[in-house]
Image 1 (cartoon, rainbow, N blue to C red):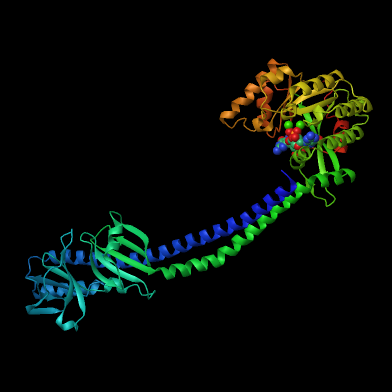
Image 2 (image 1 turned 180 degrees about the horizontal axis):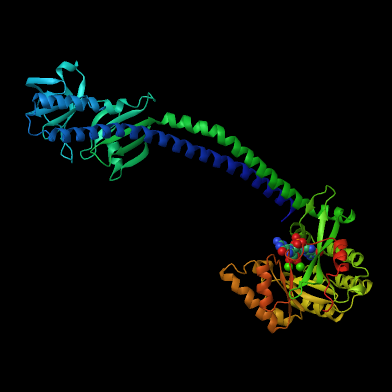
Length: 525
Ligand code: C2E
Ligand code: CA
Ligand code: CA
């Protein structure tokens, strides 16, 4: 990709990041607003229903009490006294009475010689309660009541009692209904009967209908239902309130993300130039990570790992800049620097520790480059390395062109350098690769070591790799060993060497030398 199109791509991605997080925050605000308002409208509907259910409870209770006095005349003084007591203890009932022939004959309010006409029954619920939904009682000054009746016993409830309970929100529509028949009993505002149908067989539902957010609920115990509806304007207000909070957060998150994208893109684009400057300024150095004998825990070698400390003090990870250097065709310069640094760092080391080895990572380009081979030969001479003191680590990717790489590997081995196949198992190579090249070591990639003891399906792979390496008489190094359990597992399976945080993190060359001086090195290879 050209630098120009990469810049354009980064800009587009940055803008997309801002757009995406902003849209997401708007979406989140909508959802939050809807959830909040739905909770509220359901709350109103439940309040109304609770009020109806309490009245029904009290009615059932009253009927039971009156039935217990069946032996007395329904409108005798004793019974009227019981009725008074009942209406006193029943908060949601205005009066309790007795009905005969569509007339209220007596009640907790007194006896009516001729009876007060109640009009015909409007509905009989599926629980056998006869409901008169709109009864005007003469002495009540035109106020309307609902009269529930069973076996002649009746409860008188103000028609709008349930929907009067919730008055916190002036523009909320409220209604009560009879679930079986789908009839509205009382309502406040333009409640639509069809809303009841949305409930189906359920006990609660909520939905948006044109201009309103609607909640419909039904009692599990009684033939009571309730509706509450809020104008959508409320919802919009709520959504806007959530947006005020969430959208700025979304935009800021988007900008941060965009800046990060641009920063990394700039880094990536400018990297070749920055790398060249870094080479000139000597910003690279090498750390060494011990490789141990799994039987004794002693150091048998160390892998040279490049480190980059920028002039700003920032450390850049090799898995970020090595691939970029490979892409930019700069890896050979980096490898040359590593070889130079190792030459200096290990001077005199092999005289004192004849069995010790230093591993050096090579990339694909290095393995196809005579100059690198020449530098490695010079390294061997300058450090007085004997056969096996220097080990080349080549990953499977690095051996992509087996013809050329094969010849170079043979040349290197002929010069006394040993060769390890690195990150084994992560590339595309197969058994044929292992047979074609003459390797000395096989390094099992950390990703396989991580699966040990996890029971994952891939945890079997490590066993196959070990068997394969044994069959080919390769020495095995397990990479990234972090736990005792992993080390024990590997040792029991005959793996000779390991490298990982359990034994030591990459360290400076001074620390490596100090460790060797302290007797960490294995004495026999
Ligand atoms: P690699 O060759 O597989 O190196 C091993 C990596 O695993 C190192 O990461 C090492 O620090 C890390 N490691 C070792 N033991 C453990 C452990 O127990 N736990 C964990 N989590 N990590 C562990 P590092 O130094 O960051 O290097 C990353 C990669 O960069 C190397 O992978 C190698 O591919 C590349 N690299 C490093 N130095 C050079 C170099 O001089 N030349 C080239 N061409 N590539 C290099
Ligand atoms: Ca390596
Ligand atoms: Ca490796």
